[in-house]
View 1 (cartoon, rainbow, N blue to C red):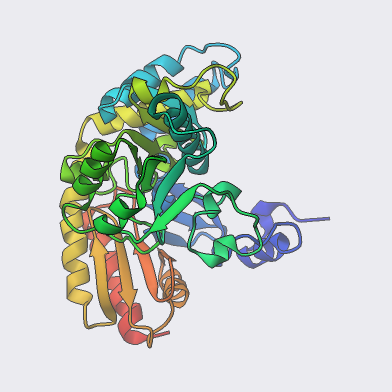
View 2: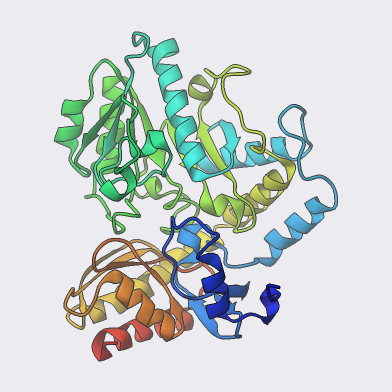
Length: 408
Protein backbone atom coordinates (compact mmCIF):
# COMPACT_ATOMS: atom_id res chain seq x y z
CA UNK A 1 0.00 0.00 0.00
CA UNK A 2 1.25 3.49 -0.82
CA UNK A 3 1.87 5.65 2.23
CA UNK A 4 -0.21 8.84 2.53
CA UNK A 5 1.55 11.92 1.18
CA UNK A 6 1.71 13.43 4.66
CA UNK A 7 3.87 10.51 5.82
CA UNK A 8 6.25 10.48 2.85
CA UNK A 9 9.51 12.33 2.42
CA UNK A 10 10.44 14.57 -0.48
CA UNK A 11 12.59 11.78 -1.90
CA UNK A 12 9.67 9.33 -1.61
CA UNK A 13 7.31 11.67 -3.45
CA UNK A 14 9.81 12.49 -6.20
CA UNK A 15 10.40 8.78 -6.79
CA UNK A 16 6.64 8.16 -6.83
CA UNK A 17 6.18 10.67 -9.68
CA UNK A 18 8.70 8.98 -11.98
CA UNK A 19 6.56 6.10 -13.30
CA UNK A 20 3.21 7.89 -13.41
CA UNK A 21 3.87 11.47 -14.59
CA UNK A 22 4.79 12.39 -18.15
CA UNK A 23 8.35 13.72 -18.19
CA UNK A 24 7.53 17.09 -19.76
CA UNK A 25 9.13 19.00 -16.86
CA UNK A 26 12.44 18.79 -15.06
CA UNK A 27 11.58 20.37 -11.70
CA UNK A 28 14.03 21.21 -8.99
CA UNK A 29 14.10 18.45 -6.33
CA UNK A 30 11.92 20.26 -3.78
CA UNK A 31 8.40 19.09 -2.86
CA UNK A 32 6.29 22.05 -1.77
CA UNK A 33 3.51 21.29 0.71
CA UNK A 34 2.53 24.69 2.13
CA UNK A 35 3.01 28.35 1.25
CA UNK A 36 2.21 31.83 2.55
CA UNK A 37 3.22 35.17 1.12
CA UNK A 38 6.75 34.95 -0.26
CA UNK A 39 7.64 31.69 1.52
CA UNK A 40 7.05 28.03 0.73
CA UNK A 41 7.63 24.97 2.89
CA UNK A 42 8.46 21.43 1.82
CA UNK A 43 7.09 18.21 3.28
CA UNK A 44 9.92 18.05 5.83
CA UNK A 45 9.22 21.59 7.02
CA UNK A 46 12.17 23.34 5.32
CA UNK A 47 11.34 26.90 4.27
CA UNK A 48 12.35 28.57 1.01
CA UNK A 49 12.10 32.14 -0.22
CA UNK A 50 10.21 32.08 -3.51
CA UNK A 51 12.07 34.13 -6.13
CA UNK A 52 10.13 32.71 -9.09
CA UNK A 53 6.47 33.34 -8.15
CA UNK A 54 5.13 30.73 -10.57
CA UNK A 55 6.64 32.54 -13.57
CA UNK A 56 4.63 35.63 -12.48
CA UNK A 57 1.42 33.71 -11.75
CA UNK A 58 1.94 34.57 -8.06
CA UNK A 59 2.53 38.32 -8.38
CA UNK A 60 0.52 38.86 -5.18
CA UNK A 61 2.25 36.08 -3.27
CA UNK A 62 0.96 32.75 -2.11
CA UNK A 63 -2.56 32.77 -0.68
CA UNK A 64 -3.06 36.55 -0.62
CA UNK A 65 -5.83 37.09 1.95
CA UNK A 66 -8.08 39.17 -0.32
CA UNK A 67 -7.85 36.60 -3.10
CA UNK A 68 -8.41 33.63 -0.81
CA UNK A 69 -11.44 35.38 0.68
CA UNK A 70 -12.90 36.04 -2.77
CA UNK A 71 -12.38 32.41 -3.76
CA UNK A 72 -13.90 31.03 -0.56
CA UNK A 73 -16.90 33.32 -0.86
CA UNK A 74 -17.53 32.22 -4.44
CA UNK A 75 -16.99 28.53 -3.67
CA UNK A 76 -19.97 28.75 -1.32
CA UNK A 77 -22.18 30.15 -4.10
CA UNK A 78 -21.39 28.96 -7.62
CA UNK A 79 -18.32 27.63 -9.42
CA UNK A 80 -19.30 26.79 -13.00
CA UNK A 81 -22.18 27.38 -15.38
CA UNK A 82 -20.30 27.22 -18.70
CA UNK A 83 -21.11 30.02 -21.10
CA UNK A 84 -24.36 28.27 -21.98
CA UNK A 85 -25.81 30.60 -19.34
CA UNK A 86 -24.95 33.99 -17.90
CA UNK A 87 -23.46 34.19 -14.43
CA UNK A 88 -23.58 37.04 -11.94
CA UNK A 89 -19.79 37.60 -11.72
CA UNK A 90 -18.65 37.82 -15.32
CA UNK A 91 -19.91 41.29 -16.27
CA UNK A 92 -18.13 43.00 -13.38
CA UNK A 93 -14.89 41.17 -14.13
CA UNK A 94 -15.01 42.15 -17.81
CA UNK A 95 -15.96 45.77 -17.07
CA UNK A 96 -13.22 46.31 -14.51
CA UNK A 97 -10.53 44.53 -16.54
CA UNK A 98 -11.39 46.57 -19.60
CA UNK A 99 -11.24 49.78 -17.57
CA UNK A 100 -7.90 48.79 -16.00
CA UNK A 101 -6.33 48.22 -19.41
CA UNK A 102 -7.92 51.16 -21.23
CA UNK A 103 -9.69 48.92 -23.74
CA UNK A 104 -13.35 48.06 -23.93
CA UNK A 105 -14.05 44.36 -24.62
CA UNK A 106 -12.91 41.12 -22.98
CA UNK A 107 -12.78 37.52 -24.18
CA UNK A 108 -12.27 35.38 -21.05
CA UNK A 109 -10.27 32.17 -21.34
CA UNK A 110 -8.26 29.97 -18.97
CA UNK A 111 -4.56 29.57 -19.75
CA UNK A 112 -2.02 31.85 -21.34
CA UNK A 113 -1.66 29.58 -24.36
CA UNK A 114 -5.43 29.72 -24.86
CA UNK A 115 -5.27 33.51 -24.79
CA UNK A 116 -2.57 33.46 -27.47
CA UNK A 117 -4.48 30.98 -29.63
CA UNK A 118 -7.61 33.11 -29.22
CA UNK A 119 -5.71 36.27 -30.14
CA UNK A 120 -4.45 34.59 -33.31
CA UNK A 121 -7.97 33.54 -34.29
CA UNK A 122 -9.36 37.01 -33.62
CA UNK A 123 -6.59 38.66 -35.65
CA UNK A 124 -7.21 36.37 -38.61
CA UNK A 125 -10.98 36.90 -38.45
CA UNK A 126 -10.42 40.68 -38.30
CA UNK A 127 -8.07 40.48 -41.29
CA UNK A 128 -10.72 38.73 -43.40
CA UNK A 129 -13.81 40.61 -42.22
CA UNK A 130 -12.39 44.12 -41.78
CA UNK A 131 -9.08 44.46 -43.61
CA UNK A 132 -10.18 42.41 -46.61
CA UNK A 133 -7.32 39.93 -46.76
CA UNK A 134 -8.20 37.09 -49.19
CA UNK A 135 -9.44 33.89 -47.52
CA UNK A 136 -6.73 31.77 -45.89
CA UNK A 137 -3.96 34.24 -46.79
CA UNK A 138 -3.60 36.11 -43.47
CA UNK A 139 -0.11 36.24 -41.95
CA UNK A 140 1.10 37.15 -38.48
CA UNK A 141 4.59 38.50 -37.83
CA UNK A 142 6.36 37.33 -34.67
CA UNK A 143 9.78 37.76 -33.06
CA UNK A 144 12.59 35.23 -32.86
CA UNK A 145 13.30 33.76 -29.41
CA UNK A 146 9.65 34.29 -28.48
CA UNK A 147 7.73 32.28 -25.95
CA UNK A 148 3.95 32.34 -26.28
CA UNK A 149 3.09 28.80 -25.17
CA UNK A 150 3.45 25.21 -26.34
CA UNK A 151 0.39 24.32 -28.40
CA UNK A 152 1.05 23.00 -31.90
CA UNK A 153 0.12 26.32 -33.52
CA UNK A 154 2.29 28.32 -31.15
CA UNK A 155 5.37 26.11 -31.46
CA UNK A 156 5.00 26.48 -35.22
CA UNK A 157 6.49 29.96 -34.86
CA UNK A 158 8.92 29.21 -32.05
CA UNK A 159 12.67 29.28 -32.71
CA UNK A 160 13.34 26.97 -29.75
CA UNK A 161 14.07 23.54 -31.21
CA UNK A 162 13.36 21.85 -27.88
CA UNK A 163 9.78 23.10 -28.16
CA UNK A 164 9.50 22.25 -31.88
CA UNK A 165 11.40 19.06 -32.59
CA UNK A 166 9.11 16.09 -33.11
CA UNK A 167 5.85 18.05 -33.19
CA UNK A 168 5.42 18.89 -36.89
CA UNK A 169 3.86 19.39 -39.34
CA UNK A 170 3.63 23.02 -38.36
CA UNK A 171 0.90 25.57 -38.87
CA UNK A 172 1.61 28.01 -41.71
CA UNK A 173 0.89 31.74 -41.74
CA UNK A 174 3.68 33.13 -39.56
CA UNK A 175 6.76 35.19 -40.36
CA UNK A 176 9.63 35.36 -37.88
CA UNK A 177 11.86 38.43 -37.61
CA UNK A 178 14.59 39.36 -35.11
CA UNK A 179 13.33 40.93 -31.89
CA UNK A 180 14.09 44.62 -31.33
CA UNK A 181 14.60 45.21 -35.08
CA UNK A 182 12.11 47.67 -36.56
CA UNK A 183 13.63 47.55 -40.03
CA UNK A 184 13.22 43.78 -40.23
CA UNK A 185 9.69 44.09 -38.92
CA UNK A 186 8.75 46.66 -41.53
CA UNK A 187 10.16 44.48 -44.30
CA UNK A 188 8.04 41.52 -43.15
CA UNK A 189 4.71 43.36 -42.98
CA UNK A 190 2.64 43.46 -46.16
CA UNK A 191 -0.98 43.61 -47.30
CA UNK A 192 -1.63 40.08 -45.95
CA UNK A 193 -0.45 40.89 -42.42
CA UNK A 194 -3.20 40.56 -39.86
CA UNK A 195 -1.06 41.37 -36.81
CA UNK A 196 2.33 41.74 -35.22
CA UNK A 197 2.51 39.56 -32.09
CA UNK A 198 5.31 40.29 -29.63
CA UNK A 199 6.19 40.19 -25.95
CA UNK A 200 6.99 43.71 -24.71
CA UNK A 201 9.75 41.99 -22.71
CA UNK A 202 10.81 38.50 -23.73
CA UNK A 203 10.59 36.45 -20.54
CA UNK A 204 11.64 32.90 -21.39
CA UNK A 205 14.47 34.23 -23.56
CA UNK A 206 16.06 35.71 -20.44
CA UNK A 207 14.09 38.90 -19.64
CA UNK A 208 15.17 40.61 -22.86
CA UNK A 209 14.22 44.28 -22.76
CA UNK A 210 14.04 46.04 -26.15
CA UNK A 211 15.66 49.38 -26.89
CA UNK A 212 13.79 52.52 -25.91
CA UNK A 213 11.45 53.42 -28.75
CA UNK A 214 10.99 49.87 -30.06
CA UNK A 215 7.46 49.38 -28.72
CA UNK A 216 6.45 52.85 -29.84
CA UNK A 217 7.92 52.01 -33.24
CA UNK A 218 5.88 48.80 -33.43
CA UNK A 219 2.77 50.78 -32.58
CA UNK A 220 3.46 53.41 -35.27
CA UNK A 221 4.35 50.81 -37.90
CA UNK A 222 1.26 48.69 -37.33
CA UNK A 223 -1.01 51.73 -37.52
CA UNK A 224 0.65 52.93 -40.71
CA UNK A 225 0.56 49.48 -42.32
CA UNK A 226 -3.03 48.76 -41.27
CA UNK A 227 -2.51 45.70 -39.09
CA UNK A 228 -3.03 44.89 -35.42
CA UNK A 229 -0.46 45.15 -32.63
CA UNK A 230 -0.92 42.21 -30.24
CA UNK A 231 1.03 42.53 -26.98
CA UNK A 232 1.56 39.31 -25.06
CA UNK A 233 1.68 40.55 -21.45
CA UNK A 234 1.04 37.16 -19.90
CA UNK A 235 4.32 37.31 -17.97
CA UNK A 236 5.17 41.02 -18.14
CA UNK A 237 1.75 42.40 -17.22
CA UNK A 238 -0.23 43.06 -14.07
CA UNK A 239 2.35 44.94 -12.03
CA UNK A 240 5.50 42.91 -12.65
CA UNK A 241 7.54 45.70 -14.28
CA UNK A 242 6.33 48.58 -12.11
CA UNK A 243 3.41 49.46 -14.37
CA UNK A 244 0.11 47.68 -14.83
CA UNK A 245 1.36 46.76 -18.31
CA UNK A 246 4.91 46.73 -19.65
CA UNK A 247 3.81 48.66 -22.76
CA UNK A 248 3.00 51.60 -20.49
CA UNK A 249 6.73 52.30 -20.13
CA UNK A 250 6.50 53.73 -23.64
CA UNK A 251 2.96 55.06 -23.41
CA UNK A 252 1.77 52.48 -25.93
CA UNK A 253 -1.76 51.06 -26.21
CA UNK A 254 -1.88 47.89 -28.35
CA UNK A 255 -4.90 46.81 -30.37
CA UNK A 256 -5.02 43.45 -28.60
CA UNK A 257 -3.73 42.60 -25.14
CA UNK A 258 -3.11 39.04 -23.94
CA UNK A 259 -3.24 38.46 -20.19
CA UNK A 260 -2.93 35.40 -17.97
CA UNK A 261 -0.83 34.02 -15.10
CA UNK A 262 -1.27 36.67 -12.36
CA UNK A 263 -4.86 37.28 -13.49
CA UNK A 264 -5.81 34.11 -11.60
CA UNK A 265 -4.12 35.25 -8.41
CA UNK A 266 -2.26 31.95 -8.05
CA UNK A 267 -5.59 30.24 -7.31
CA UNK A 268 -7.25 29.29 -10.61
CA UNK A 269 -6.13 29.60 -14.23
CA UNK A 270 -7.57 32.80 -15.73
CA UNK A 271 -6.59 34.44 -18.99
CA UNK A 272 -8.13 37.00 -21.30
CA UNK A 273 -7.92 38.66 -24.67
CA UNK A 274 -8.69 42.35 -24.24
CA UNK A 275 -9.28 44.65 -27.20
CA UNK A 276 -11.54 47.35 -28.54
CA UNK A 277 -14.96 46.54 -29.96
CA UNK A 278 -13.93 46.92 -33.60
CA UNK A 279 -11.51 44.01 -33.09
CA UNK A 280 -13.19 41.59 -30.66
CA UNK A 281 -16.56 42.44 -32.17
CA UNK A 282 -15.73 40.26 -35.18
CA UNK A 283 -16.54 37.11 -33.16
CA UNK A 284 -20.02 35.66 -33.46
CA UNK A 285 -21.70 32.90 -31.40
CA UNK A 286 -20.25 29.49 -32.16
CA UNK A 287 -16.99 30.75 -33.67
CA UNK A 288 -14.94 30.44 -30.48
CA UNK A 289 -15.49 29.29 -26.93
CA UNK A 290 -14.35 27.53 -23.78
CA UNK A 291 -16.27 25.45 -21.26
CA UNK A 292 -14.44 27.00 -18.32
CA UNK A 293 -13.62 30.41 -19.78
CA UNK A 294 -15.40 33.11 -17.77
CA UNK A 295 -16.60 30.71 -15.08
CA UNK A 296 -17.90 32.43 -11.92
CA UNK A 297 -15.06 31.27 -9.67
CA UNK A 298 -12.47 32.58 -12.13
CA UNK A 299 -14.38 35.83 -12.60
CA UNK A 300 -14.62 36.39 -8.85
CA UNK A 301 -10.89 35.82 -8.34
CA UNK A 302 -10.05 37.88 -11.43
CA UNK A 303 -12.12 40.77 -10.14
CA UNK A 304 -10.29 40.61 -6.81
CA UNK A 305 -6.97 40.73 -8.71
CA UNK A 306 -8.12 43.81 -10.61
CA UNK A 307 -9.13 45.42 -7.31
CA UNK A 308 -5.60 44.93 -5.97
CA UNK A 309 -4.12 46.49 -9.09
CA UNK A 310 -6.53 49.42 -9.04
CA UNK A 311 -4.87 50.66 -5.84
CA UNK A 312 -1.50 51.08 -7.58
CA UNK A 313 0.22 49.59 -4.52
CA UNK A 314 1.78 46.66 -6.34
CA UNK A 315 2.99 48.73 -9.26
CA UNK A 316 4.68 51.09 -6.78
CA UNK A 317 6.24 48.20 -4.89
CA UNK A 318 7.64 46.73 -8.08
CA UNK A 319 9.13 50.09 -9.01
CA UNK A 320 10.67 50.78 -5.62
CA UNK A 321 11.92 47.25 -4.95
CA UNK A 322 13.08 47.04 -8.55
CA UNK A 323 15.72 49.59 -7.62
CA UNK A 324 16.89 47.32 -4.78
CA UNK A 325 17.04 44.39 -7.21
CA UNK A 326 18.92 46.35 -9.87
CA UNK A 327 21.40 47.83 -7.40
CA UNK A 328 22.02 44.44 -5.79
CA UNK A 329 22.66 42.78 -9.15
CA UNK A 330 24.96 45.61 -10.16
CA UNK A 331 27.06 44.82 -7.09
CA UNK A 332 27.32 41.20 -8.24
CA UNK A 333 28.70 42.01 -11.69
CA UNK A 334 32.26 40.70 -11.65
CA UNK A 335 31.43 38.40 -8.74
CA UNK A 336 30.08 35.60 -10.89
CA UNK A 337 27.47 37.70 -12.71
CA UNK A 338 28.58 38.72 -16.20
CA UNK A 339 25.48 40.76 -17.01
CA UNK A 340 21.81 41.18 -16.26
CA UNK A 341 18.62 42.85 -17.47
CA UNK A 342 15.93 44.04 -15.09
CA UNK A 343 12.73 46.02 -15.07
CA UNK A 344 10.68 46.27 -11.92
CA UNK A 345 10.82 43.02 -9.97
CA UNK A 346 11.94 40.95 -12.93
CA UNK A 347 15.48 40.11 -13.95
CA UNK A 348 17.43 37.82 -16.22
CA UNK A 349 20.85 37.17 -14.70
CA UNK A 350 23.74 35.86 -16.81
CA UNK A 351 26.18 33.83 -14.75
CA UNK A 352 29.76 33.10 -15.71
CA UNK A 353 29.52 29.65 -17.40
CA UNK A 354 32.70 28.63 -15.62
CA UNK A 355 30.76 28.78 -12.34
CA UNK A 356 27.87 26.67 -13.54
CA UNK A 357 24.81 26.36 -15.73
CA UNK A 358 21.59 28.09 -14.82
CA UNK A 359 20.24 24.76 -13.61
CA UNK A 360 23.26 24.18 -11.36
CA UNK A 361 23.03 27.68 -9.89
CA UNK A 362 19.30 27.17 -9.24
CA UNK A 363 20.05 23.90 -7.44
CA UNK A 364 22.68 25.59 -5.28
CA UNK A 365 20.23 28.38 -4.44
CA UNK A 366 17.62 25.79 -3.51
CA UNK A 367 20.02 24.13 -1.08
CA UNK A 368 20.50 27.54 0.54
CA UNK A 369 16.75 28.16 0.86
CA UNK A 370 16.03 30.28 -2.22
CA UNK A 371 13.93 29.11 -5.19
CA UNK A 372 14.71 30.43 -8.67
CA UNK A 373 14.81 28.86 -12.13
CA UNK A 374 17.05 28.88 -15.14
CA UNK A 375 16.04 29.89 -18.64
CA UNK A 376 18.77 28.95 -21.10
CA UNK A 377 22.45 28.16 -20.64
CA UNK A 378 23.85 30.02 -17.63
CA UNK A 379 20.98 32.46 -17.26
CA UNK A 380 18.58 32.43 -14.31
CA UNK A 381 15.43 34.49 -13.91
CA UNK A 382 14.34 36.27 -10.76
CA UNK A 383 10.68 37.22 -10.39
CA UNK A 384 9.67 37.28 -6.72
CA UNK A 385 6.14 38.01 -5.54
CA UNK A 386 5.46 41.75 -5.52
CA UNK A 387 4.77 41.37 -1.79
CA UNK A 388 8.43 40.64 -1.03
CA UNK A 389 10.13 42.98 1.46
CA UNK A 390 13.36 44.85 0.84
CA UNK A 391 15.07 42.76 3.53
CA UNK A 392 13.91 39.49 1.94
CA UNK A 393 15.10 40.68 -1.45
CA UNK A 394 18.51 41.67 -0.11
CA UNK A 395 18.73 38.29 1.64
CA UNK A 396 18.05 36.48 -1.63
CA UNK A 397 20.71 38.55 -3.40
CA UNK A 398 23.13 37.76 -0.59
CA UNK A 399 22.43 34.08 -1.06
CA UNK A 400 23.05 34.44 -4.80
CA UNK A 401 26.39 36.08 -4.06
CA UNK A 402 27.26 33.24 -1.70
CA UNK A 403 26.55 30.45 -4.21
CA UNK A 404 28.43 32.31 -6.95
CA UNK A 405 31.52 33.08 -4.91
CA UNK A 406 31.73 29.89 -2.85
CA UNK A 407 30.80 27.45 -5.61
CA UNK A 408 28.99 24.19 -5.04
